[in-house]
Image (cartoon, rainbow, N blue to C red; front, side):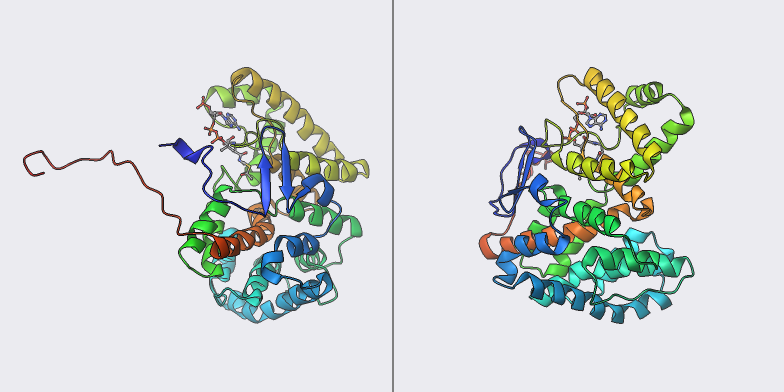
Length: 363
Ligand code: ACO
Protein backbone atom coordinates (compact mmCIF):
# COMPACT_ATOMS: atom_id res chain seq x y z
CA UNK A 1 0.00 0.00 0.00
CA UNK A 2 1.43 3.40 -0.98
CA UNK A 3 0.06 6.24 1.13
CA UNK A 4 -1.43 8.97 -1.06
CA UNK A 5 -0.37 6.95 -4.15
CA UNK A 6 2.92 8.89 -3.95
CA UNK A 7 5.21 7.84 -6.81
CA UNK A 8 2.68 5.34 -8.24
CA UNK A 9 2.32 5.50 -12.04
CA UNK A 10 -1.24 4.59 -13.11
CA UNK A 11 -1.48 5.84 -16.67
CA UNK A 12 0.42 7.11 -19.70
CA UNK A 13 -0.22 10.51 -21.21
CA UNK A 14 1.01 12.65 -24.10
CA UNK A 15 -0.47 15.79 -22.58
CA UNK A 16 1.88 17.07 -19.88
CA UNK A 17 4.87 16.01 -17.82
CA UNK A 18 5.91 17.20 -14.36
CA UNK A 19 9.60 16.70 -13.57
CA UNK A 20 9.73 17.31 -9.84
CA UNK A 21 13.47 16.84 -9.41
CA UNK A 22 14.41 19.41 -12.05
CA UNK A 23 11.47 21.76 -11.60
CA UNK A 24 10.26 21.39 -15.19
CA UNK A 25 6.76 21.24 -16.68
CA UNK A 26 6.13 20.21 -20.29
CA UNK A 27 2.79 20.87 -21.97
CA UNK A 28 2.54 18.90 -25.25
CA UNK A 29 6.33 18.73 -25.41
CA UNK A 30 6.96 22.43 -24.73
CA UNK A 31 8.42 23.99 -21.58
CA UNK A 32 5.86 26.05 -19.68
CA UNK A 33 8.27 29.03 -19.78
CA UNK A 34 8.13 28.93 -23.60
CA UNK A 35 4.35 29.04 -23.86
CA UNK A 36 2.98 31.01 -20.88
CA UNK A 37 3.25 34.69 -21.74
CA UNK A 38 3.80 33.78 -25.42
CA UNK A 39 0.57 31.99 -26.40
CA UNK A 40 -3.02 32.79 -25.56
CA UNK A 41 -5.46 30.34 -23.95
CA UNK A 42 -6.98 29.33 -27.29
CA UNK A 43 -3.59 28.44 -28.83
CA UNK A 44 -2.54 26.24 -25.90
CA UNK A 45 -5.96 24.58 -25.70
CA UNK A 46 -5.88 23.90 -29.44
CA UNK A 47 -2.52 22.10 -28.99
CA UNK A 48 -3.65 20.23 -25.88
CA UNK A 49 -6.82 19.10 -27.68
CA UNK A 50 -5.15 17.85 -30.88
CA UNK A 51 -6.52 14.34 -30.17
CA UNK A 52 -10.04 15.82 -29.87
CA UNK A 53 -10.20 18.44 -32.61
CA UNK A 54 -7.61 16.82 -34.93
CA UNK A 55 -6.63 19.23 -37.72
CA UNK A 56 -9.03 22.04 -36.84
CA UNK A 57 -7.23 25.33 -37.71
CA UNK A 58 -6.57 27.66 -34.78
CA UNK A 59 -8.76 30.40 -36.28
CA UNK A 60 -11.71 27.98 -36.57
CA UNK A 61 -11.13 26.88 -32.97
CA UNK A 62 -11.17 30.53 -31.83
CA UNK A 63 -14.44 31.15 -33.69
CA UNK A 64 -16.10 28.01 -32.38
CA UNK A 65 -15.11 28.83 -28.79
CA UNK A 66 -16.43 32.39 -29.18
CA UNK A 67 -19.62 30.93 -30.68
CA UNK A 68 -19.92 28.56 -27.71
CA UNK A 69 -19.61 31.53 -25.30
CA UNK A 70 -22.35 33.34 -27.19
CA UNK A 71 -24.61 30.28 -27.09
CA UNK A 72 -24.13 29.90 -23.32
CA UNK A 73 -26.17 33.04 -22.73
CA UNK A 74 -29.35 31.02 -23.17
CA UNK A 75 -28.61 29.52 -19.74
CA UNK A 76 -28.29 32.91 -18.06
CA UNK A 77 -32.07 33.21 -17.51
CA UNK A 78 -31.68 30.36 -15.05
CA UNK A 79 -29.23 32.37 -12.94
CA UNK A 80 -31.53 35.37 -12.79
CA UNK A 81 -34.50 33.46 -11.43
CA UNK A 82 -32.79 30.89 -9.25
CA UNK A 83 -30.73 30.52 -6.10
CA UNK A 84 -27.36 30.63 -7.82
CA UNK A 85 -26.32 34.13 -6.88
CA UNK A 86 -26.85 33.38 -3.19
CA UNK A 87 -24.54 30.35 -3.27
CA UNK A 88 -20.75 30.62 -2.88
CA UNK A 89 -19.42 31.39 -6.37
CA UNK A 90 -17.68 28.08 -6.97
CA UNK A 91 -20.76 26.09 -5.97
CA UNK A 92 -22.95 28.25 -8.19
CA UNK A 93 -20.61 27.63 -11.12
CA UNK A 94 -20.62 23.89 -10.45
CA UNK A 95 -24.43 23.82 -10.28
CA UNK A 96 -24.70 25.82 -13.53
CA UNK A 97 -22.27 23.51 -15.34
CA UNK A 98 -24.34 20.52 -14.18
CA UNK A 99 -27.27 21.98 -16.16
CA UNK A 100 -25.42 21.83 -19.49
CA UNK A 101 -26.13 19.00 -21.94
CA UNK A 102 -23.79 16.06 -21.35
CA UNK A 103 -21.94 14.30 -24.17
CA UNK A 104 -18.51 13.69 -25.68
CA UNK A 105 -18.65 15.72 -28.90
CA UNK A 106 -16.41 18.71 -29.74
CA UNK A 107 -19.42 20.98 -29.16
CA UNK A 108 -19.93 19.50 -25.68
CA UNK A 109 -16.23 20.07 -24.92
CA UNK A 110 -16.27 23.65 -26.24
CA UNK A 111 -19.40 24.46 -24.24
CA UNK A 112 -17.69 23.24 -21.06
CA UNK A 113 -14.69 25.58 -21.49
CA UNK A 114 -16.92 28.44 -22.62
CA UNK A 115 -19.30 28.14 -19.67
CA UNK A 116 -17.19 29.44 -16.76
CA UNK A 117 -16.04 32.48 -18.74
CA UNK A 118 -19.71 33.48 -19.16
CA UNK A 119 -21.30 32.17 -15.96
CA UNK A 120 -18.78 33.62 -13.51
CA UNK A 121 -19.09 37.26 -14.61
CA UNK A 122 -22.88 36.88 -14.79
CA UNK A 123 -23.11 35.44 -11.27
CA UNK A 124 -20.92 38.23 -9.90
CA UNK A 125 -22.73 41.04 -11.71
CA UNK A 126 -26.22 39.84 -10.76
CA UNK A 127 -25.06 39.48 -7.17
CA UNK A 128 -23.92 43.13 -7.24
CA UNK A 129 -27.17 44.29 -8.84
CA UNK A 130 -25.42 45.09 -12.13
CA UNK A 131 -26.54 44.36 -15.69
CA UNK A 132 -25.04 41.29 -17.36
CA UNK A 133 -22.49 42.04 -20.09
CA UNK A 134 -22.93 39.63 -23.00
CA UNK A 135 -20.12 37.72 -24.75
CA UNK A 136 -18.76 38.91 -28.09
CA UNK A 137 -17.61 37.00 -31.17
CA UNK A 138 -14.98 39.73 -31.65
CA UNK A 139 -13.04 39.05 -28.44
CA UNK A 140 -10.57 36.37 -27.41
CA UNK A 141 -11.44 34.23 -24.38
CA UNK A 142 -9.48 36.23 -21.76
CA UNK A 143 -10.56 39.57 -23.22
CA UNK A 144 -14.22 38.52 -23.21
CA UNK A 145 -14.08 37.21 -19.63
CA UNK A 146 -12.50 40.40 -18.24
CA UNK A 147 -14.92 42.57 -20.22
CA UNK A 148 -17.98 40.64 -19.00
CA UNK A 149 -16.68 40.69 -15.42
CA UNK A 150 -15.77 44.38 -15.21
CA UNK A 151 -18.23 45.88 -17.67
CA UNK A 152 -15.43 47.93 -19.25
CA UNK A 153 -12.89 46.96 -21.93
CA UNK A 154 -9.71 45.49 -20.37
CA UNK A 155 -6.24 46.76 -21.29
CA UNK A 156 -3.95 44.71 -23.54
CA UNK A 157 -1.65 44.12 -20.51
CA UNK A 158 -4.53 42.72 -18.44
CA UNK A 159 -5.59 40.40 -21.26
CA UNK A 160 -2.02 39.15 -21.70
CA UNK A 161 -1.60 38.62 -17.95
CA UNK A 162 -4.81 36.57 -17.72
CA UNK A 163 -3.80 34.55 -20.79
CA UNK A 164 -0.42 33.86 -19.16
CA UNK A 165 -2.21 32.62 -16.03
CA UNK A 166 -4.72 30.43 -17.90
CA UNK A 167 -1.93 28.85 -19.96
CA UNK A 168 0.24 28.28 -16.86
CA UNK A 169 -2.38 26.23 -15.02
CA UNK A 170 -4.08 24.47 -17.94
CA UNK A 171 -2.62 21.04 -17.21
CA UNK A 172 -0.24 19.46 -14.72
CA UNK A 173 0.26 15.72 -15.04
CA UNK A 174 -1.86 13.48 -12.86
CA UNK A 175 -2.77 15.99 -10.14
CA UNK A 176 -5.70 15.10 -7.86
CA UNK A 177 -8.45 16.76 -9.92
CA UNK A 178 -7.16 15.37 -13.23
CA UNK A 179 -6.95 11.91 -11.69
CA UNK A 180 -10.55 12.29 -10.48
CA UNK A 181 -11.63 13.26 -14.02
CA UNK A 182 -9.79 10.31 -15.53
CA UNK A 183 -11.34 7.88 -13.05
CA UNK A 184 -14.81 9.09 -14.04
CA UNK A 185 -13.92 9.00 -17.77
CA UNK A 186 -12.66 5.42 -17.35
CA UNK A 187 -16.17 4.30 -16.35
CA UNK A 188 -17.50 5.50 -19.72
CA UNK A 189 -19.21 8.59 -18.28
CA UNK A 190 -19.60 11.70 -20.45
CA UNK A 191 -17.56 14.93 -20.26
CA UNK A 192 -19.86 16.87 -17.97
CA UNK A 193 -19.44 14.23 -15.24
CA UNK A 194 -15.65 14.22 -15.73
CA UNK A 195 -15.50 18.01 -15.37
CA UNK A 196 -17.73 18.01 -12.28
CA UNK A 197 -15.50 15.35 -10.68
CA UNK A 198 -12.46 17.53 -11.37
CA UNK A 199 -14.23 20.57 -9.94
CA UNK A 200 -14.99 18.73 -6.72
CA UNK A 201 -11.37 17.67 -6.25
CA UNK A 202 -9.97 21.10 -7.15
CA UNK A 203 -11.88 22.90 -4.42
CA UNK A 204 -9.87 21.58 -1.46
CA UNK A 205 -7.23 23.81 0.17
CA UNK A 206 -4.48 21.26 -0.53
CA UNK A 207 -5.15 21.75 -4.26
CA UNK A 208 -6.93 24.64 -6.03
CA UNK A 209 -8.52 26.10 -2.92
CA UNK A 210 -5.21 27.58 -1.72
CA UNK A 211 -4.92 30.99 -3.47
CA UNK A 212 -7.74 32.75 -1.59
CA UNK A 213 -6.20 31.63 1.74
CA UNK A 214 -2.79 32.89 0.50
CA UNK A 215 -4.23 36.42 0.46
CA UNK A 216 -5.92 35.85 3.84
CA UNK A 217 -2.48 34.84 5.15
CA UNK A 218 -0.80 37.96 3.71
CA UNK A 219 -3.53 40.20 5.17
CA UNK A 220 -3.19 38.58 8.56
CA UNK A 221 0.63 38.97 8.52
CA UNK A 222 0.25 42.62 7.50
CA UNK A 223 -2.07 43.28 10.47
CA UNK A 224 0.24 41.38 12.83
CA UNK A 225 3.26 43.39 11.64
CA UNK A 226 6.04 40.84 12.17
CA UNK A 227 6.42 38.33 9.34
CA UNK A 228 8.82 35.94 11.06
CA UNK A 229 6.93 35.72 14.36
CA UNK A 230 3.58 35.19 12.56
CA UNK A 231 4.99 32.38 10.39
CA UNK A 232 6.81 30.79 13.34
CA UNK A 233 3.63 30.82 15.43
CA UNK A 234 1.67 29.12 12.61
CA UNK A 235 4.32 26.49 12.01
CA UNK A 236 4.69 25.77 15.73
CA UNK A 237 0.92 25.23 15.96
CA UNK A 238 1.17 22.65 13.13
CA UNK A 239 -0.58 24.86 10.54
CA UNK A 240 0.58 24.98 6.92
CA UNK A 241 1.75 28.11 5.17
CA UNK A 242 -0.48 28.49 2.13
CA UNK A 243 1.25 28.64 -1.24
CA UNK A 244 4.21 26.50 -0.18
CA UNK A 245 4.97 22.82 -0.70
CA UNK A 246 4.17 20.35 -3.44
CA UNK A 247 3.79 16.60 -3.77
CA UNK A 248 6.02 16.34 -6.84
CA UNK A 249 8.30 19.39 -6.95
CA UNK A 250 11.35 19.14 -4.72
CA UNK A 251 12.68 22.36 -6.22
CA UNK A 252 10.76 25.52 -7.03
CA UNK A 253 7.47 25.06 -8.94
CA UNK A 254 8.30 26.47 -12.42
CA UNK A 255 4.78 27.86 -12.69
CA UNK A 256 5.47 30.12 -9.69
CA UNK A 257 8.40 31.67 -11.60
CA UNK A 258 6.35 32.13 -14.77
CA UNK A 259 3.63 33.98 -12.85
CA UNK A 260 6.20 35.93 -10.81
CA UNK A 261 7.74 37.26 -14.06
CA UNK A 262 4.31 38.47 -15.25
CA UNK A 263 3.62 40.02 -11.86
CA UNK A 264 7.03 41.73 -11.61
CA UNK A 265 6.44 43.33 -15.02
CA UNK A 266 3.08 44.67 -13.86
CA UNK A 267 4.41 45.81 -10.48
CA UNK A 268 7.22 47.69 -12.27
CA UNK A 269 4.47 49.67 -14.00
CA UNK A 270 2.93 50.52 -10.64
CA UNK A 271 0.19 47.87 -10.37
CA UNK A 272 -0.06 47.18 -6.60
CA UNK A 273 3.73 47.30 -6.34
CA UNK A 274 3.79 47.69 -2.53
CA UNK A 275 1.70 44.55 -2.08
CA UNK A 276 4.00 42.60 -4.40
CA UNK A 277 7.14 43.76 -2.55
CA UNK A 278 5.56 42.85 0.81
CA UNK A 279 4.49 39.41 -0.46
CA UNK A 280 7.98 38.69 -1.73
CA UNK A 281 9.43 39.56 1.70
CA UNK A 282 6.94 37.12 3.25
CA UNK A 283 7.98 34.50 0.70
CA UNK A 284 11.69 34.80 1.54
CA UNK A 285 11.13 34.59 5.31
CA UNK A 286 8.61 31.74 4.99
CA UNK A 287 11.03 29.73 2.83
CA UNK A 288 13.81 30.16 5.36
CA UNK A 289 11.55 29.10 8.28
CA UNK A 290 10.21 26.10 6.33
CA UNK A 291 13.81 25.10 5.57
CA UNK A 292 14.64 25.21 9.28
CA UNK A 293 11.42 23.48 10.35
CA UNK A 294 11.37 20.70 7.70
CA UNK A 295 15.02 20.33 6.60
CA UNK A 296 14.34 16.94 4.96
CA UNK A 297 11.29 17.95 2.95
CA UNK A 298 12.46 20.80 0.64
CA UNK A 299 9.29 22.90 0.77
CA UNK A 300 9.32 25.65 -1.86
CA UNK A 301 6.90 28.24 -3.24
CA UNK A 302 4.10 26.67 -5.31
CA UNK A 303 1.96 28.07 -8.12
CA UNK A 304 -0.82 29.19 -5.78
CA UNK A 305 1.31 31.83 -4.05
CA UNK A 306 1.80 33.76 -7.30
CA UNK A 307 -1.67 32.88 -8.60
CA UNK A 308 -3.12 34.74 -5.64
CA UNK A 309 -0.96 37.81 -6.23
CA UNK A 310 -1.51 37.90 -9.98
CA UNK A 311 -5.29 37.48 -9.82
CA UNK A 312 -5.45 40.12 -7.07
CA UNK A 313 -3.33 42.36 -9.29
CA UNK A 314 -5.95 41.86 -12.03
CA UNK A 315 -8.55 43.03 -9.50
CA UNK A 316 -10.31 39.68 -9.49
CA UNK A 317 -12.00 39.08 -6.14
CA UNK A 318 -10.41 36.30 -4.05
CA UNK A 319 -13.73 34.44 -3.80
CA UNK A 320 -13.39 33.76 -7.56
CA UNK A 321 -9.83 32.42 -7.56
CA UNK A 322 -10.60 28.70 -7.53
CA UNK A 323 -13.30 29.19 -10.16
CA UNK A 324 -10.85 31.07 -12.42
CA UNK A 325 -8.39 28.20 -11.94
CA UNK A 326 -11.15 25.79 -13.00
CA UNK A 327 -11.88 28.00 -16.03
CA UNK A 328 -8.48 26.99 -17.38
CA UNK A 329 -8.08 23.49 -15.92
CA UNK A 330 -11.38 22.31 -17.44
CA UNK A 331 -9.49 22.26 -20.76
CA UNK A 332 -6.91 19.94 -19.15
CA UNK A 333 -9.55 17.68 -17.57
CA UNK A 334 -11.31 17.30 -20.91
CA UNK A 335 -8.03 16.52 -22.70
CA UNK A 336 -7.30 13.80 -20.11
CA UNK A 337 -10.85 12.44 -20.08
CA UNK A 338 -10.82 11.94 -23.86
CA UNK A 339 -7.30 10.46 -23.77
CA UNK A 340 -8.49 8.06 -21.06
CA UNK A 341 -11.49 7.07 -23.18
CA UNK A 342 -9.29 6.56 -26.26
CA UNK A 343 -6.43 4.61 -24.64
CA UNK A 344 -7.34 3.58 -21.11
CA UNK A 345 -9.04 0.84 -19.11
CA UNK A 346 -11.43 1.12 -16.17
CA UNK A 347 -9.42 2.57 -13.25
CA UNK A 348 -10.20 0.29 -10.36
CA UNK A 349 -7.50 -0.09 -7.70
CA UNK A 350 -7.82 -2.16 -4.55
CA UNK A 351 -7.86 -1.43 -0.84
CA UNK A 352 -6.26 -3.29 2.03
CA UNK A 353 -9.00 -4.27 4.48
CA UNK A 354 -8.19 -3.37 8.11
CA UNK A 355 -11.74 -3.42 9.53
CA UNK A 356 -13.54 -5.91 11.74
CA UNK A 357 -13.79 -9.54 10.70
CA UNK A 358 -16.38 -12.16 11.60
CA UNK A 359 -15.18 -14.23 14.58
CA UNK A 360 -13.39 -17.43 13.66
CA UNK A 361 -16.30 -19.73 14.57
CA UNK A 362 -18.42 -18.04 11.87
CA UNK A 363 -15.74 -18.11 9.15
N1 ACO B 1 3.57 24.53 5.47
C1 ACO B 1 4.04 23.85 6.52
N2 ACO B 1 4.35 22.53 6.48
C2 ACO B 1 4.19 21.91 5.31
C3 ACO B 1 3.72 22.56 4.16
C4 ACO B 1 3.40 23.93 4.27
N3 ACO B 1 2.92 24.62 3.23
N4 ACO B 1 3.65 21.69 3.14
C5 ACO B 1 4.06 20.50 3.62
N5 ACO B 1 4.39 20.64 4.93
C6 ACO B 1 4.88 19.60 5.83
C7 ACO B 1 3.74 18.79 6.41
O1 ACO B 1 3.23 19.34 7.59
C8 ACO B 1 4.40 17.44 6.62
O2 ACO B 1 5.13 17.51 7.81
P1 ACO B 1 5.22 16.20 8.78
O3 ACO B 1 5.87 15.15 7.93
O4 ACO B 1 6.04 16.68 9.93
O5 ACO B 1 3.80 15.85 9.12
C9 ACO B 1 5.41 17.35 5.49
O6 ACO B 1 5.69 18.69 5.08
C10 ACO B 1 4.86 16.58 4.31
O7 ACO B 1 3.54 17.02 4.03
P2 ACO B 1 2.52 16.17 3.16
O8 ACO B 1 1.16 16.80 3.29
O9 ACO B 1 2.65 14.71 3.40
O10 ACO B 1 3.14 16.39 1.74
P3 ACO B 1 2.36 16.42 0.41
O11 ACO B 1 3.33 16.09 -0.63
O12 ACO B 1 1.15 15.57 0.43
O13 ACO B 1 1.94 17.97 0.40
C11 ACO B 1 0.73 19.87 -0.24
C12 ACO B 1 1.66 18.75 -0.70
C13 ACO B 1 -0.61 19.25 0.12
C14 ACO B 1 0.55 20.86 -1.38
C15 ACO B 1 1.33 20.59 1.01
O14 ACO B 1 2.61 21.09 0.71
C16 ACO B 1 0.43 21.72 1.54
O15 ACO B 1 -0.51 21.44 2.28
N6 ACO B 1 0.69 23.00 1.15
C17 ACO B 1 -0.12 24.12 1.59
C18 ACO B 1 -1.38 24.25 0.75
C19 ACO B 1 -1.08 24.68 -0.69
O16 ACO B 1 -0.26 25.55 -0.95
N7 ACO B 1 -1.80 24.04 -1.64
C20 ACO B 1 -1.64 24.29 -3.08
C21 ACO B 1 -0.86 23.20 -3.74
S1 ACO B 1 -0.48 23.55 -5.44
C22 ACO B 1 -1.78 22.93 -6.34
O17 ACO B 1 -2.39 21.98 -6.00
C23 ACO B 1 -2.17 23.59 -7.60
